[in-house]
Length: 297
Image (cartoon, rainbow, N blue to C red; front, top):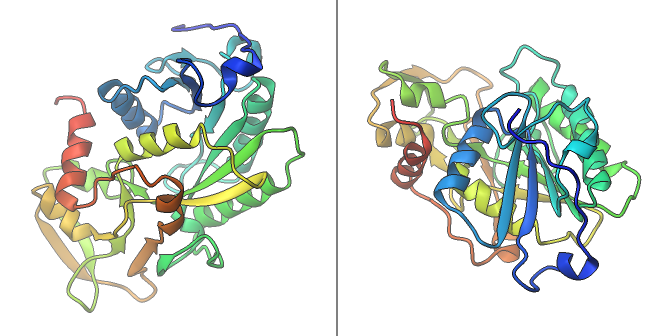
């Protein structure tokens, strides 16, 4: 087992944001998945003196090996707990577990004395549309999106324990979404072609940029007890542009009826809240950043 850290308690002065040289402590639950591994690589490649990030997983490879059924006394104290763990629509598991895991994240945050809990939802809660902001009425079209919306509603119904909650409606993450295997493989990428001659348009973000958002939000308590925030690069990109940036050939097929042409998020609120963050925006920059985090073949 890689780490067994007993809880430690800071004084209120130590924990006050922006004072002294004490870094903000983030505990990321679920660091063993595809996104978690990319975030770990980003944390190693881009250290930040203002934050201390610990990644948990059930398996070796993270900073801390810990099972959710174990006592929280083995976990380090934290200022912010991030619920990265979850079940995706591509896994042969019950996606309703996302609600159970969100509740467990909130329990752990309270037990560790964290001020903030961050929960990862998805753009899938919206369904299709362009430039959808946080006030847009959700209309999920698959089981994963519906499960994430159920998770959001469960977080809103949690008892008030003093922990403030961010729910991040996360865009596709380069290297951790359904397109990732095609970007890595030797075979051409098959994509739906829409009437404008291009592939699906999606909001994307790099793992490095997700990490900088998490670090920044860890020291920002929401004004309300629970708040929603879209997290994406400022501009949507097409999947074929990403495939070309990765040097992949494309095989086109006519988009079937009901295929989602546009799924893009408004990031107006994100940019207003964290105006100093600079994101990877172009397909070339996104692919380059992702490849910098991938282990050498």
